[in-house]
Length: 154
Image (cartoon, rainbow, N blue to C red; front, side, top):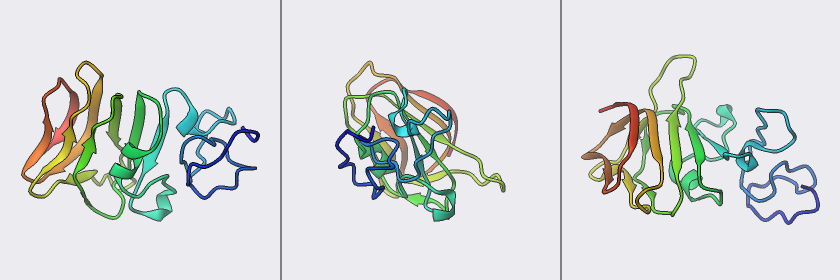
């Protein structure tokens, strides 16, 4: 990976980066293969509004907008409280968005306010999965495609 261009904007030195084509400031490599989770197949990104969780991104939308391949998993920690954002998933690729438990079993809350927490407008037929999330706001998930939803709380 050291000979590849490194312009992903994660602030990691290109000499030591384990994934030069996708932002992954955490440099996580859960399988220990020397390739960052963001470059594994399927790619994995980590989100938390709490810097102590060592996330790649502090909001879900930034992770969804990061350059990556279809099938990406976005793991979201509870962070320091609800994520007040409307997440737009409008790229022609599949996503899996998973809320993770912390030691206090706090829920992962996405608060869309007056809008949907998630607005899914990607091409029909691509797999889209949401797991272990609490969605607040006027609407949970707005979409016109089939979704796979598991353990979602209002």
